[in-house]
Length: 257
Ligand SMILES: N[C@@H]1[C@@H](O)[C@H](O)[C@@H](COP(=O)(O)O)O[C@@H]1O
Picture 1 (cartoon, rainbow, N blue to C red):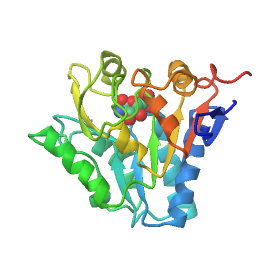
Picture 2: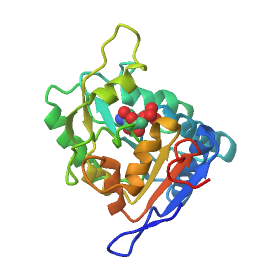
Picture 3: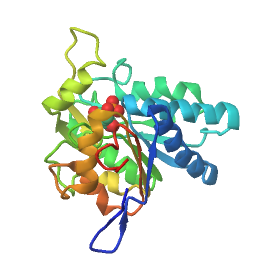
Picture 4: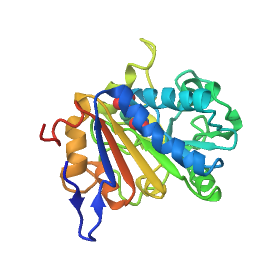
């Protein structure tokens, strides 16, 4: 894959790995986080939910059990949370991070952070979260998945470059993709609190993961299309330390082989 050189002469992405399958995507992504935590055991790490991230958490847990990597002083920050779900709801994103990762390592659950989806005033909860991120000195390394429509976190198409953490409406595409995670008959939340584009771009390093054919168009738009709110992930091209990891299916429209 050829790099994109923007007007400032910057190369994007900083690195691009195409691996065989979803498991390898997670393993490759975890290497970046292990390196950051080895260098700084008190690192602030930004976490993503979703199916693609599962193998990433499996790899981090393996680093804990086999390499004795400690998360005891790490703080984690979710990208987003559904509005209307308390932390204890089985489908809350806070709970997803605890179940997939937190309870399998030595991070105290008080150091797992997410926007408060149950707050009566979502605007206020979003502002509190943005303030929390600033008060801890920002995120050292942020994991991002990629929505089929090019969203990152829950920044749906139309999200502005300068957006901060805020309440957002989910699009039909996202609702269809995520409804499967809720029990049949249960209507999923239609809104969420999400870190904004500007919030995400403050992270010192970003690792974006994509797996499967359903992400191929979005990955192509992100890397090759015009930069703009129609494809929120394209705004990542304004950041100098983005590492993209995709499996062959997701990368099929941006690789020649
Ligand atoms: N809000 C989440 C994102 O943070 C996630 O990265 C993305 C991809 O999810 P998946 O890996 O399940 O396709 O969509 C969800 O809607």
